[in-house]
Image 1: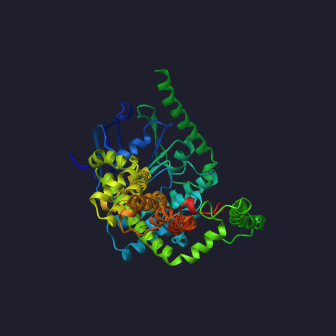
Image 2 (image 1 turned 180 degrees about the vertical axis):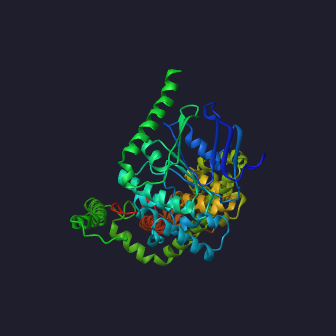
Image 3 (image 1 turned 135 degrees about the vertical axis):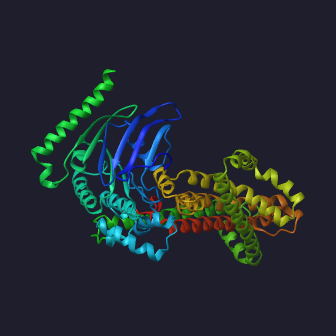
Length: 259
Length: 274
């Protein structure tokens, strides 16, 4: 992953001419050029099947690009945290053990892992649930555990693949706020995949709208992330941003329909 | 589970339902035994044609020293066959999971062993192997396949995203096996073991009958065959009774093991309300 020309310090993730063609011949992605700055919160927005999850998996190294280069700054193991659409917890063990997994796989001793697991669970407000089993938790709580597991290695980059799509609106809003607070405190680079215009505008500094099949970047929108909170959700400014991005999204889908 | 919960109103009907699950089979059993008794009594059948339940029971008591000895022999064979089948089945499944080539080359023969009736293989095994070994081999042949196929299914049913997570954190093959594949496969493996328990008893019985009077065998199946030759029909029934009791106990023990291992997390072992 970290071959070729060195990546400038301020760029956390860089994609150059990246494409993905699946074995069955379906062109899922690209070519795509994308730079994500360190500490930036970027959303990839697009309809289902536009290759945004594929892009995320390429960045994580979970699948290989057909062509092009994916470069990450740093590149130490555990530099990436990944949150899937489902909580993806191991049902046979406790919450604490689930969060400890990345450390266990890195051969960290139980004693030194214990403190970090506790801290990660505290960050998502689930300290007292370390001994519970995943099935005893609600959907939103499981997603928080998933987030804690992604944070436990203190990664530079957090990749999130429609993490809140399956949750009810109340829970989703609360987790949106929590995620923003975490991002402000920890200053991680976050790449967030979503199909919700409202979620992408609410969370990100930069929204990247993608076209379906193959996924290409159609347009980009930048927002000032200074003041976001429950007030912002109902503000005229937020509504205007959402309208702007919505138009971008329908243009991106419309172009494909016309061709 | 952790949260306090008020007693549901349907609690009493739940208890009744649970009670019925135990009582109803017993009622059927009692009715069956009664019918059996009446058929023997009203037709005045002699014990060498069809012994009544009373005669079978007294035979069981009277011949207990012989029968219990045979029971132990059969159970021991079954246990050895079962252990061999479990270890062999799980080990083969793990090998197949690690190497596609091994699976392609060996799986057809595992299936051949499974589909060839063991009653037809047993006489051959008895020629080439010492009797005790042959009997265990039979139990193994019948019982290992469900363990193998269930374990394989389990190892292949790993959550794709969890597998991706392990890949992301650079897990070694051994770590993936120990922390992901085996725990995911556990419910399937236990299901396989439950089938294998009953099958290894069948394997042991088949081999004992095939060995017949030729050997010095003294298992329950051998007793049944021997009593048949001697027209000791009540003892045949008594031995048969012990065999099915053994089968039921084996099944219940394995079901209990499965419940104890899975009760904290797996759907199959959870009550419908939790």
